[in-house]
Length: 272
Length: 330
Picture 1 (cartoon, chains in turn cyan, orange):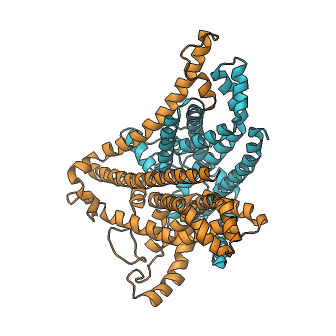
Picture 2 (picture 1 turned 90 degrees about the vertical axis):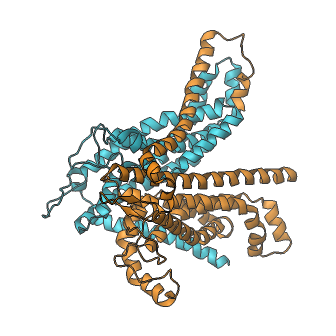
Picture 3 (picture 1 turned 120 degrees about the vertical axis):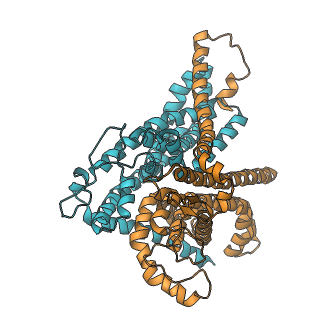
């Protein structure tokens, strides 16, 4: 039976290897500067170089906006739960965060569609709002974990010196936890950067021009890969692999760095 | 706990000025508003989905849930969620069936069997698999996995196990329910195995050592101590995995092939609730169709909320039980 456990682990690692290897092998050969700088040409019959410049710009704008929305709210939720809330509210809102984290991404997309898109159309901001909903429970959860690591002796020392609680929280507790919060944010960004489902209904009906204006619908890398993967044209598949490769490198790099930082930070925050 | 206790209980603090208390109040209100906002958001999601599906809800009622139909032709419009619920249940059930033994094996390997030097890097690798975006797994599924399954695996399963209705004639294009099942099992494997790994790590060392001291082999110890101790938590992990599999839309849309019918062959096409919604993103032709799509989203939301709440409930129950036993030991 122990042999089966070895086999299972080997299969799991082999799957990861095969997926990453496929993306890397097919993506690497298609990777060139045109991907970042050139626009896509719809229904192109020639071999003129095409890229996904619009998708890279859109992903930067939308993920940046989503982070700007989710980060402050997530930190505030965590501060409330860890520093102010009575235990019953902490459990209750903790459950709410778990439920929110369990709402399927496509349902979040539909929700933002009904709430904001019907009637007035898609835009990058609305897509960012959908991504921010996915980021919120993640940021709040990791921040709660980090705040719980900050030694109580610090808070008590500060309060004992007569420093009010809001200043203790803002200038003693949060600065101590900032490394861990940043790590959690990087992980959250890595997760939503690859999300397709929330953007399909909020920011997907786009042109081929590169735009940085979030009041218009913006193309993103995941949505572009999704569309290209459904295309019958092998040239489109090639671009999908290349864009997927860039996305994968970004996500793997971000999550591995964050993981490495997290172990270092946990020690530092707890003062050990 | 902590700082809250210090300030709680004193409605007036004689040694601090008004300005200071205003700061405390402001931060508490601001942070409390954010927490309230998160709570309201969950309610708003439920309400907006009901609101958006109102047209379809009032026209079809609950009959929508079981009806097998999706006809957007104007004049003959008829919608129902039956085949999509069937597809969702079939794909996520079989994905869980495939992923569970693998995940248990991985978790056991990482906690009991692997040499210490291997544990950290392999854990990181498995968790990295969880970070791969679904659209990339779907891309791989449709362009690499699907064709392989169609030319090698499906004909073989059909010829050897074809007497079971599940293994019908191989799919034409490599896009089938079977491909969706494989893709989904790859996606839930890291979640179930990393939660199970933490559960296995939580088994008290004295119980394991006690069993080993009684002369059990390592495998007997795992079967007699680790599995029973972690059983409740593993059940919760499996339900979370199931919820994740039911809610996945993108990768499934890419590989499942589409279609509105109920059949038992895994090699045919189909659709899940999520994949039907995702596949319709370019727009609906009528308000009734749009409303019916949102109705599908509402059903999906209810299914995944139920799965999540059941899992959370089990987690809390198990934590209480183990908390008591651990307290008893100390």
